Length: 315
View (tube, rainbow, N blue to C red):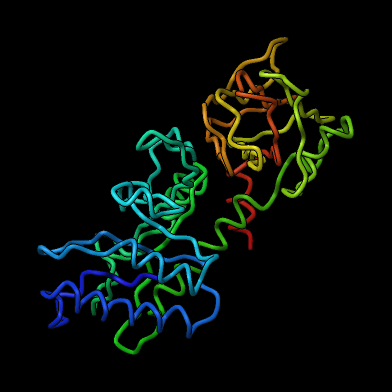
């Protein structure tokens, strides 16, 4: 739910006390009439001289919806559970860490990236199909947000009927199909069986996880195949109940008698997608080069986007 505090059309806006009563009444209606709210966007917006009573707004929400996550940018640091990425381009500048140090203390603040489905604006306009983002643009957005351990909020606007425009519905359907196609065939599913512990990160089930040796700051998770496989991206998920621990890692393949890195990074977090030039190998590994404590990995997967695109065209 996004209830903008900057309602300049409301005559009481110039009277801070009266306007706060009006805004809180709106919040009460929304918080009590539509079931469980997952997220409340607390937007600083503009002010025109108005001083918002953010403590009162959050307190009102918490009384009625105690489990709702509050989004706020860093200017409203003390009120939020989720932080803004800092742009509306659908881009998380890497590296992405969930813990933020502000005002002398640490807070767990996962990042959220918001961007409209239509280029450069959030609202519907007639005869505006040209602004609809292309499928390749949306896939790049996905890989630079969800693939960088963030949550993607894709802005979709209703038309004058109060409905989502047909062109938008079609593009969203194509977007969903493209994500499922590109990340639907995990090549690790056909790997040679390893140890029972390692299998917990290779089983396709994000509810299980592999733990590096207790107290370790370095570890290796290797995948072997009975024949060479070609792939051009890797997806890694960290189990976060104990925090974000991986500080430096590499995706490596074994070729010509030695290991070589095809991707390197620092943060993994909830989900990290690494893209690289296609490689062919029968051995690949996630190399945890540094971690604050033993790493916990929920999933390590590899994909071939070229093969997925070919299968999609056949369908």
